[in-house]
Image (tube, rainbow, N blue to C red; front, side, top):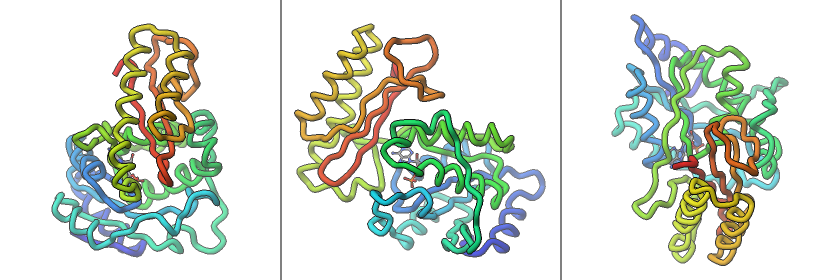
Length: 281
Ligand code: AMP
């Protein structure tokens, strides 16, 4: 497994992996890797990648004042061991100054699906995501990139950005990998106390019930309000629970024939948890 920490060596390693028409898959991450991240490597391979590059970059541009960049978990040695075991071919570990050299002045702003939800709770977050992703795509020249459905809004923002900028890359969406009790895996889960970890899977159970009721034609506004009340009663501080048009993230007060997604964000102690699912599932 090649480890690249500067742009010239990344470019030549990626060019070698892409030689003779071989297709390169990219898995962008912020590290502190778990099974959810490793599933992205398998998905990129299944989508036709002959070689896989993973990036580990805690992108300061997507953190804002209320986020704690310094607190984000980091485990480079553990991550490299996991990627090696998973058969990753190359790891891109760029220093911040390589991604954003002094004088950097360009950002990408995606309207539409960035609006509301995570975009509302974390101003500037999707500007950071939409700016770093095309850089990673262009730096590696990847043919395929895998993103998790766990971050549904991010997936739609990246799809919109790639379409709008005519970036010739296939975006593979990967279903959320969950613990045995249904709790969606996330790097931040390690910050939950033992008691909070026991409560955490209720987020999934509650949104599953809400999704089932909506799919059975129960009144949406009422079902969402009941779901939020259940979250609060269970010990969460819900931020939003919303039914949206799956691609545009437009909130829905009535069901439509277009694909729909139920989105949830709730704080449990100091940890902000996200989950989502299709309706019908
Ligand atoms: P992160 O390192 O949290 O920025 O995530 C990097 C990528 O892994 C993103 O595409 C996430 O959506 C994806 N991801 C994170 N957690 C999961 C999960 N539980 N299942 C599937 N993909 C995930």
